[in-house]
Structure formats: structure tokens, C-alpha cells
Image: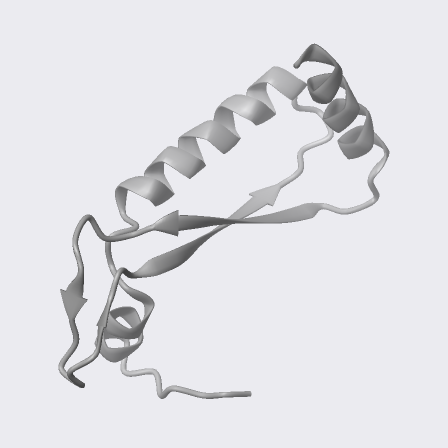
Amino acid sequence: MKSKVNYWRSELARSPQALLLLAFSISGARKPVLRPSGSMDMDLNLLPLRLRLNRSQQFQEALTDTRRKAYGGVANSDLPFDVLLDKLHVPWSTL
């Protein structure tokens, strides 16, 4: 495990990027959901985490911030994407 942490520490230290985007596949529902369209699914959601890399921050602090953001995202992940689009009045698009 320590070698994996050291690997990521060195990769992030050498990266010229200021932003890092990680996406995790999570199950957003505890039970099947019946949609208004009549379809039924288990709501598999993606949890994107947008992280700003701070060169002056210690690696342990970056891990702590990432953990906090991940836990916060998971705590609010039960909202299916189609419901989010409807609430924000954003039209569906296939592009």
C-alpha cells in the first residue's frame, strides 16, 4: 500500500496540471426505482470529484481533502442524474 501512495505522490508532484478529475461508479439507490416512463432500474451513478492541486499543500493534507470531498459526494449521491436534470430544467442531450 505504501508503494502505491508513494507512486501517486510522485506522479502528482510532477504533473503540470492544476486540476484533477476523478470519477467513481457508485450505486446511488438501495432498492429498484420505478421511473415515470415505466422503466425500472437500480440507479448506477457516477460520482465525479474535481480536485484543485495545491503545490504548497502536503500530500497527507491533499489526501484528507480528497477523502472529505469523496465522503460528501457519496452522502449526496442518491439523487439520480435524470432527476437532477429535471430539477435544474436542463434538457436531455445525446451530444
